[in-house]
Image (cartoon, rainbow, N blue to C red; front, side, top):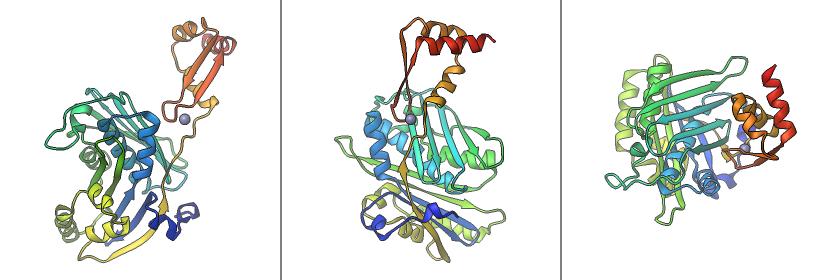
Length: 302
Ligand code: ZN
């Protein structure tokens, strides 16, 4: 635990600001995040449809929950690549900060069983998780999507790729007008050798717990949700920290992306006076002159 993660005041709880709370319950860790404001901001930044807001909000919340298992300067990236109309869903988190985007923010499908058809929007394909761990090369694992609804896809990924039994719930409530009303999620992570009895009890509790987005909408704090999930077990709340949107893009990083483009594409760009590149996460615009693009072509030739 680092000090950056404990800059939390009573203000954060009372004002309904976004927070993530961590706890241990025997050999199990429970993480609960409230991400309403962050998802609201993402939906405004990217002008997402109701359905795209739900998908992006779930993915970004999932990334924050996975990042909660890592150190503050370490990060995690989630890429959901299905064949559905939303295109790719991308989410990244480091400590209490997150960012993300979807391929098609205008995606629309009719609701399925009264819920957003996120699975239909995502389609079939894969989920990849990249962990940026201190002192190690980034590690990427991939698993097939289960239903494209993201929570079960993450649970399946954690089991098949990282051998971690877990339970993930992610939820976003959107008003008919398209505003984010509540968003959040939980992640129950079993540590190695955790007892069957504890798992059975948690499983029963999970089944009896309402949707996480409904609980957050009703004003339940993450700590209270943890106590619901860990009912009948010794719950030890470890800490809480604030969550917020952040993009660490820069001109250098965007230039790095341009450098990976095929020479032909760069040559086509060099025909224009100015090339404008937009950060897909925060919409920041970076411009490159013809001479700058030319020098990238020259370097590529070498
Ligand atoms: Zn950016």
